[in-house]
Length: 263
Image (cartoon, rainbow, N blue to C red):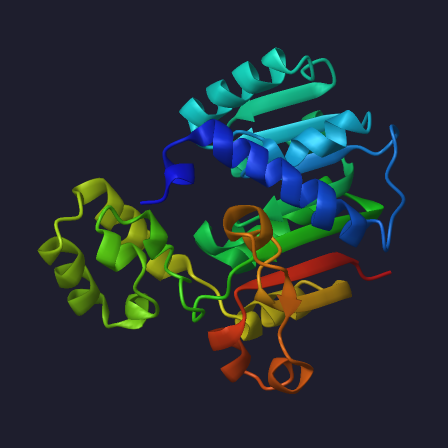
């Protein structure tokens, strides 16, 4: 398990750095962001992705199912004096009334969609929170990429650095996790991710099913977030490989999408 998975404040700051440097400019290719831009983050955790938006004066809402992380977020933003324009909600998005919460100019989800069961249902539901000309940013690792199973959270140093073993059959994957002494909570989380992991092709299919327009998409061989985590320069997947369905999943560590409703 890497230090950032234990030091939540460090993870918060890493999220903020990547969002400021890469995510916001990516969204601004399609929508100008200023103090009038309402932002919603679904699966916000401690809210690090919202920090640069708040620094720009944007009114922000973060929603998450993890009560402890929402509590951490409230503490972090209060310490930073950035809590005046922020609403943090501990709740399931499905239990949220769109009329009460309102619609947003920007919705963001980083490293979240791959944790959601029934992404087809979710992507249809979430449209209610997007303004007619709003933009929806999603960044996620394809399931088949080297660490698409999020095995970096393993306590075993060997397993946390072992690529692709999450692709083993369910029963064998579970046995290996138990053999290396992973706790029940981590095993449960990793098996849950195995059920919800999403490929590039299936995500594209879900977008088509719900009539989303893809404003921009890019596949990264080196995830932009790896710059702050490992000191690596982001690199897009070679275009010749990115064009090959299925194969591209194995060498793409992160996908960036900006989508909107078809007019």
